[in-house]
Length: 88
Image (cartoon, rainbow, N blue to C red):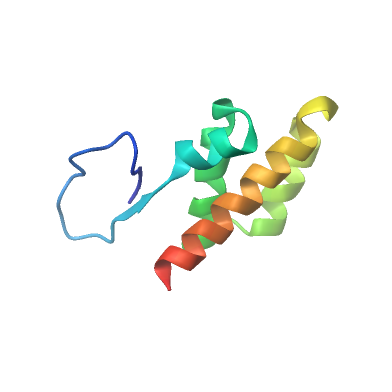
């Protein structure tokens, strides 16, 4: 389970791996908190096998307006890197 460390003060407990990541803080550092979901998507893709990172990147490239492309691709990358660093 992935949660935003800044927003989820009491994460659920259970028989699963919990990753409390600085999702919204990372998005703010990129200049737009609205990309928090893309940061989270990058983290999810790095921690799971649900979708290949290159497929996800292609989806962002084809589904994002040009003026937001670089921001969204950077958010995706930052989320993946953060998750991999936290997972060790």
